[in-house]
Amino acid sequence: MAAPSSSRSTTLTATYTSPTITQTFTHPLPSSSTTSLAQKTAYLSNLRQSMTKLQDEINAFLTKKMEEDKALAAKAGVSDQVDEKKEEDFYGEEDPSPTSPTCYDIQGHVA
Image (tube, rainbow, N blue to C red; front, top):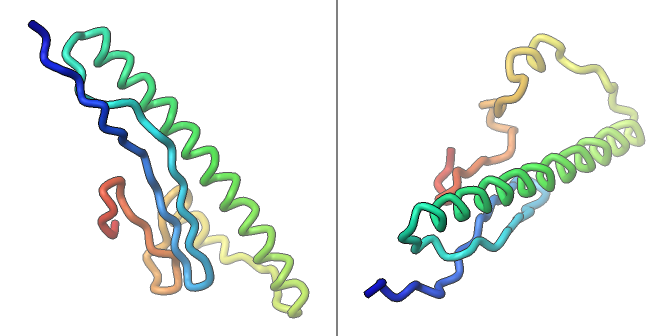
């Protein structure tokens, strides 16, 4: 006899926090209590799709946020010069400087 499946709902959540804004992104996931190989494969496929959607939403949000910040800086007369060396050093990674937003891993721990 098969074990009863759990109907517990799970969510994939990421939170962006900066000194001026906090934004939470959430995607529902099916129950992870799977027993067969087909169920496990389907669950992992759904998880991957949800991760990709979550990543796309975060990227769109951050792009919009950067454009807003640039517009505010231009309005205030702040130069739009970018520290090319710093940009290159941290390309695709979080800048560890104290003014950068706080990042959290999937369990909500500060990364």
